[in-house]
Length: 228
Image 1 (cartoon, one colour):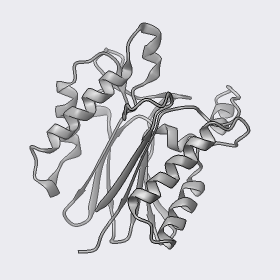
Image 2 (cartoon, rainbow, N blue to C red; image 1 turned 90 degrees about the vertical axis):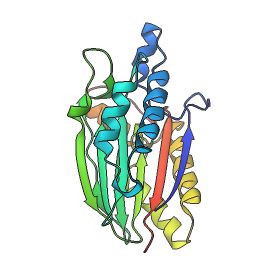
Image 3 (tube, rainbow, N blue to C red; image 1 turned 45 degrees about the vertical axis):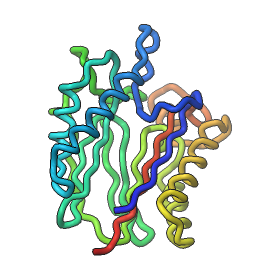
């Protein structure tokens, strides 16, 4: 599997995580929790065989070792033997699998209500790893996996993401080029007050009526499944 990743911060600072921003009202930088959770997740993967990494064990271990204040969504995806994707997800990050120009799988999200995702954290009201969605998807050589935070999926419709990925596949672009194109389109849309976006449509369903793109941190990861 070959991967490319790209991160655009809402404030253009370099903090690749998706801490839940509501903590700022209480003087807490939620990015610190997310950054510590990510670092602990990476360390946890090193204790398992490369093709047998269990994302739930990774999440459990990382969560137990993360002590910062704040909260974060989390989506951990691993490729195991037999071309099986194993994933766990808490909150509104998600991923999709594209095969021969079609979306064959899209992961669900967890929301309490509009713009209020499940989130891991050390406070009593936060979710715990046992509440994570557990996902398994069989993939094939040539499949493209696109994962991202809500900054991607709130600004681009699935068909827009599919069109960008399909164009990249047709042009034989690498994962790095594909992720750049996708992230830039999401960022440009997030700054467009006249754009029609998934976030705008969701806000209307939730009675909030917010027009245009959603300014947010944007993380995008594009992976291509290689042949044996």
